[in-house]
Amino acid sequence: MRLLIIADTHVPTRARDLPPQVWDEVDDADVVIHAGDWMDVALLEAVEDRSTRLVACWGNNDGPELRERLPEVARVTLEGVRLAVVHETGPSAGRDRRMVEAYPDTDVLVFGHSHIPWDTAAPGLCAGARGRRGGRGRTAPASAEPVGRAGQPPGRAGRRSADSATLGCMTTEATMRAVTQQSLGGPEVLVVVDHPRPEPRTNEILVRVKATSVNPTDWKHRENGGFLGQP
Image (cartoon, rainbow, N blue to C red; front, side, top):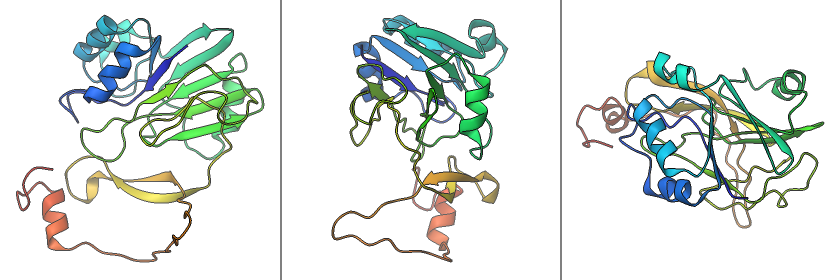
């Protein structure tokens, strides 16, 4: 069974449409899972039309029309694996414990909202987040084949590439605090998140930066002042 897992697509507020790569995956997947923040009913209807099966919930940015058509928590059993799909799970600290308590009858929990990759395993539960990352108009899909169960080693739940991730039960990644910018604007659009800590590969080093700054080219471009044109 081939799954496509996406969240926080924010169409059309942050992108005009899903990237062609994602639409190709929608066409190929046996089941499409969306963990909320659609923003527009038109995208929901387009995904419904093109997907073989859709399992989805609403997000905190979705309005009344989307909430009428989608549940806050979507549940499905696929090949004996019980999945729950929800948008928000609260802060990262203590998330594993809270989710095990909140979803005792779930094998795999899919969530969004954080806008960062998150693959972890807790006793009896796999949890994973997918969503937009890397700036405007880019959506990171997750593709899994077949479905994995809690306790399986990495790799048995699917396959991983540079632009996709499995719905596997991975060990919790070390994280660091990072300042991200998901939209154009001034300091008010900066968001502090927990981000996976980079691990240097062979012939690479990891540099710790204690302080940095931006020059006029950077902040004028980020405020969409036309200094470098549209991103």
